Length: 58
View (spheres, helix red, strand yellow):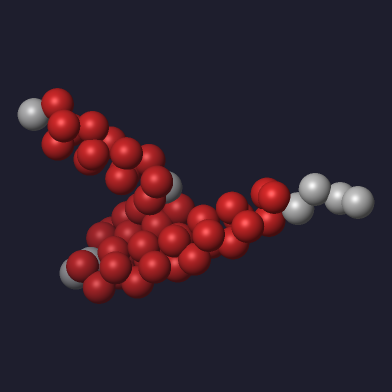
């Protein structure tokens, strides 16, 4: 029997990426901001962790 525990994580990450794209796309105002929104959507966990550590560290 195959181990399918990774499939759930991929689905959650994919849904998070789509949600992040919607959020960042709505915040964008120009061409390069839309390009940046796509990048942010892909790397949203890294941005979230960075912002969290920044808030904790002051």
